[in-house]
Each structure stands twice: as C-alpha cells, then as structure tokens.
Amino acid sequence: MKVDFGWTQDKREAVVNAVEAWLIKMQAFHGETIQQSDRCAEGLPEFMSDLVDDIIKPKVDWDDEDF
Image (cartoon, rainbow, N blue to C red; front, side, top):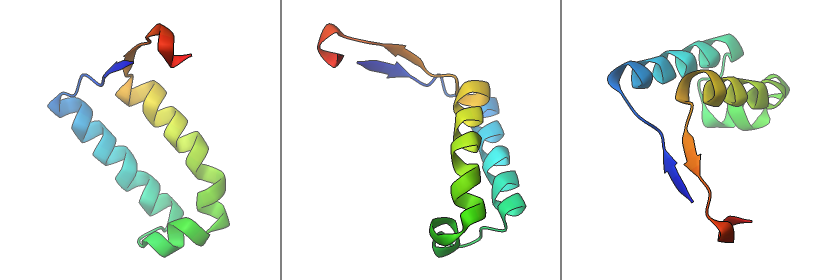
C-alpha cells in the first residue's frame, strides 16, 4: 500500500488548528485526561473521522497483497 498525505502548509495549519480546537473543547491538556475522560473517548472517533475525511484526505493505492 502507498499512502500520499499531500501535505501542504495550509493542510498542516488546518490539522493543528483542528487539534487545538478539539483539545480546548474537551479540556484535554494532558495525556492522562485524554486516556481517562469519557468525553474524550466518546468524541475522538468522530473527530478523527472528520479530520481525515475533511482535512487530511489521504490518497491510498492498495496492493493486492493488502487484502
């Protein structure tokens, strides 16, 4: 499999801004909080999905042996 994230400065800044906003929203300023907070555990899958689908948008070329 080959993955191209197509990083640009704008994309990097958008990811950082999204992560910062999520950390503030979740009041998650320490790793322990992120790991133990129900709020973080419930919100992280949706956040990551949106981050990947809406901002990062990686392009993946799958090889036959990847399946």
